[in-house]
Length: 120
Image (cartoon, rainbow, N blue to C red; front, side, top):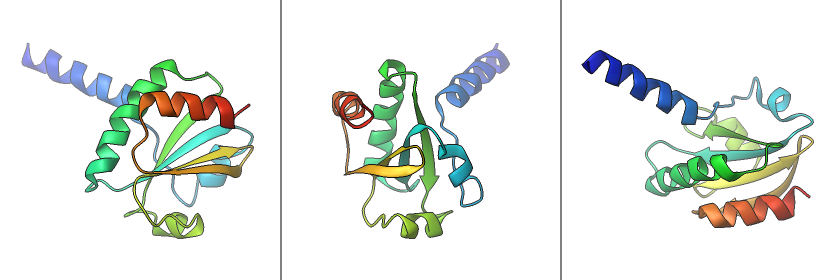
């Protein structure tokens, strides 16, 4: 029974986790799409709160928006390239180009509203 529970927990966690981008796959993954990139660090408490809000947002968001993450501890080059100086930082990309930046915790409602405005 315990194995079934752990397997179920792992599957649910993997469904709710977002693909982490690196310098190697960043441009390819965002090309031609509406994308929200969450620049975060695993040690950052506000980043964890935003991660929970992004999970709620994922359920309600438009199907034409994808969410990815960049761990700034692992990819400092991307953080510097996009001038990420505070955490958490969300950068919205449309067709591979940055269109908007949000710094700090965004509520699910704020994410829904901003995505409707910025991606239309």
